Length: 138
Image (cartoon, rainbow, N blue to C red):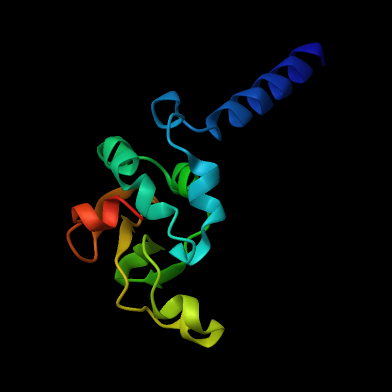
């Protein structure tokens, strides 16, 4: 009975530890990124350089890590074979003008995070290449 109790608690702590953000991604200002839903406040544009530093480290990470670091996606697309693409806007656009336009992707630049069928990051791209103007908001 005592062994079962210890094993159950050990497994619980192990699972809780598995749901945390890796240390290598903790330097990123997730709170500011998450607070700028749809990129309408143009705060994400100022974090593009920081995002570039962690982008390569996110490859192979599970979906929960992406959600811990970047928050809920602004939009999501389901692909064949259970693949998904999460979209995070990094600049204001049509998505900021009207609530109804948020169901369709706007032409504003965005980060596109592709998750494979195993729920791991397989690709991270931008809708358009990031320019100096995008990375440095006024």
